[in-house]
Length: 173
Image (cartoon, rainbow, N blue to C red):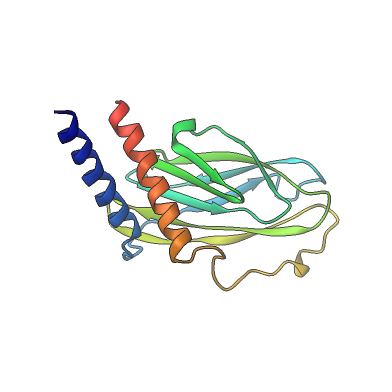
């Protein structure tokens, strides 16, 4: 009985990974990002809000710029994983995810990411957002042409992490 449950769980995890890693059409899904405050003071806490459609079931991966430090989130802790500057959120119908970062003493950065909706088999990039500390010229902050660190290995790691988070949350219920 125990080995049957383990092999069943393994199959579900693998299926989840495949669904998360399979590219799909973006459809009507869009993840929006906003900041408060929009122009932080040096070392100030910034609340980042991500909004998703009510039927969203999958993961959101946020890539934080160097100098910005992830502090906390209001999202359930079993639905969040952090790997350096990459933060992964498992979403199971929540329409809003908020997290807090600390801004550097000066400069600017670009927060960008990727989302995967396993319910609709859609995926896409979140629009890049420039965050400039007060007194910094944001024109010096460039938006990369592609999301850095989202190569095959990082994407597989992110997909695996999101699948495990979702399965853990689902199995506990």
